[in-house]
Length: 480
Ligand SMILES: Cc1cc2nc3c(=O)[nH]c(=O)nc-3n(C[C@H](O)[C@H](O)[C@H](O)COP(=O)(O)OP(=O)(O)OC[C@H]3O[C@@H](n4cnc5c(N)ncnc54)[C@H](O)[C@@H]3O)c2cc1C
Image (cartoon, rainbow, N blue to C red):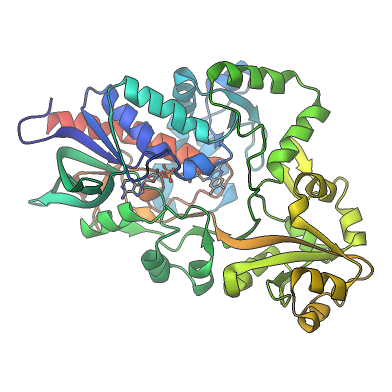
């Protein structure tokens, strides 16, 4: 129990996937937990996610007769991104506990489809939440409340309270002004830093720093607090992007905007399991055209990327680096009718959810007509989109007949990968490798040099590092 000098046992900063998982885990140990969330609602990056989690040793794998081991999972992670051995302990921690994370999420009410196969995983490991990533936050918040976690929304943590080299709570800003919360442990789980101008300028290339963050609220507050407490930071130059992404649809496809009622999700999951593949494919295509990237194959086949003035920015998805430095980091993918026809049937797809569906050019025409612009030739299209006619004519000189422009698309940062150094219990380490007493980190804030390139690994890390490692914050808090 908290003594008279503390307001609670554990303060968790951030109610995203990592923070909510951490809050539940700490509360299960009997700790009194206060969760600070700077926003009024639950809209961290977790809520933007597709909701795919890769995991090994789950109940759902066993039910499907799939034999899997954490060691095999840890090895397969390396195939997506060969990385240095100093993160081996964290990869193993993730692999060993990922199955328990999925099983816990299932127990508290998340409904999964899968496991689906997806390279480079040697066995099916992809578990997809129904209907999408935001459900993790709804379900975990319900569980946290049930466990007695106290939520403070609109409370932006600004500073750690430090005494004699130990962390003793956090200060935060809320409508009521500056507040202090004394605690035995603090868990930093405030996401990544893709929207921090200061950290981007320090750690990323000029193009990466100029790209548009998908989540403008990922301001790296936890990174900065950890730094000020003396934390060692790892792989701060790691980043997903700039990636080209078509601007998001104004409204979510109906399948992703279904209410969060459990009976409806159960019905949705049963429907998806038993629906004819053609119908399922149609529904999946709605999601695939909502906010996706143009495939590399489109550029290999002759498409080009132009900026908002119609000037050539490149001819590969790497052109995102160039586009990031052009005005508004915004442009269009340009091709001709022959290219559009080619990308209308397998194997020439424009976006994919592996194992579930492919979206072709005509799916964009049907599902996102706002993105598809046709012109009789370069001049007509330039006039329609307000391009500089001469620059665009040059960029499109190799194309013939009717020309399309797909967009706008933008050079975006999905997430940054760098974070505070932690050990396998989630304790934040200083630059000499010693634990900073009372300080823990999870998710994007505590990524500790782990490059999570394979699909489904970021959510697996957020929830697993939050839940399993940071359970120690609760146990340690009670023993301090
Ligand atoms: C479009 C998109 C799709 C994705 N799809 C997938 C996918 O399918 N599978 C996958 O594995 N990964 C996916 N990812 C990546 C994944 O969603 C994230 O890496 C993961 O959700 C990060 O979780 P987190 O808890 O660390 O951060 P977040 O979910 O961002 O949570 C951080 C929380 O902290 C709060 N906060 C920030 N600063 C403060 C402060 N000072 N005080 C209080 N609160 C604060 C924020 O408001 C936020 O609520 C996707 C990412 C994007 C952008």
